[in-house]
Length: 156
Image (cartoon, rainbow, N blue to C red; front, side):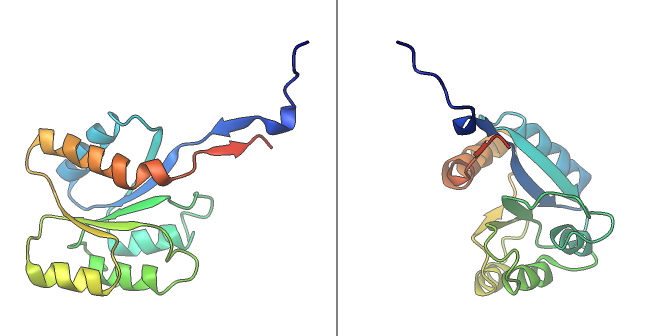
């Protein structure tokens, strides 16, 4: 006798929602290309400054209907609001303080790294200089952050 599947037990996969706050178009392009190589389904949203990042997280105009990100990749040296200011707002908010936030920056300055950790970043990563290093970064993201994100949800 064949067992019938209960339609209520079916699940569907969703994409990993990543918010990238980055003002350098070349870095955005490299990150997009690297994420295309992911073994996980990824939906990347890019904002160009810290003010837009916070508007996105708060679902303010023009981001009223956006999904909450599963992971935030945050440049440290953003215009409008710096990565430090954005991090302080993120970690000070009950609504999105639990979202893993990784600083992805060109800065190797120890003061920047210390400040980032003081405001609660989950990781401080220096931007890769070579394409192959972007693939290494992708593997790091997958193995340490993305694989922990639940991607299955029941059909509704």
